[in-house]
Image (cartoon, rainbow, N blue to C red; front, top):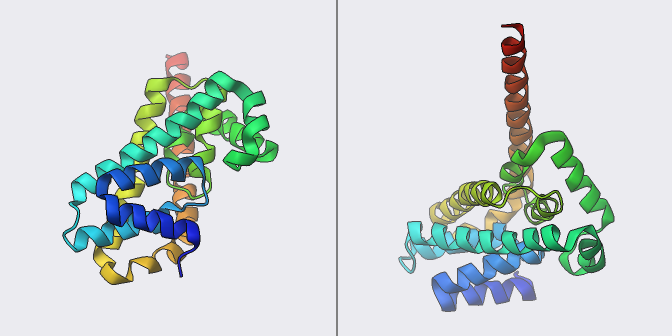
Length: 205
């Protein structure tokens, strides 16, 4: 059974198509209780029924994700930590979550934006420290768009393949997202290690 808030997302997608999907993805980024792992497979199901096209659906979902992420980035960049701590209860981001996200940046650099876009719960939060720590806007847009496009394509594709059983996907995502997070962390660690090795070789030369 869909919750009341999921019913609203469902109705917006079915009745408004691409525009509804963009709106839902914007809200999903701002208010995490609307889960993309439920909305996107439904969009994939609508593609399988011929109501939407695959490429346009991925594009609409990614645009909505980017707009929502940019709103949070802007709050963090121009409002700073005081604004986040003041309005955090509406954004579902408390002091502990903000500190943890900032620690991700300190440890892994801004590549964490790419990996976190594919992890439920971290998807929205990561945009805020990207702003508070003044990550470059162009780089933020590029990494957010890429990470969102990958995540959206996978979930929409799964919804397309499962058809009427699209709602089973939300139960799979928790475990799968841990694998994605681990792969992202390993990938970033590899990049940082490779960069250090190259610097050491240049220093020796």
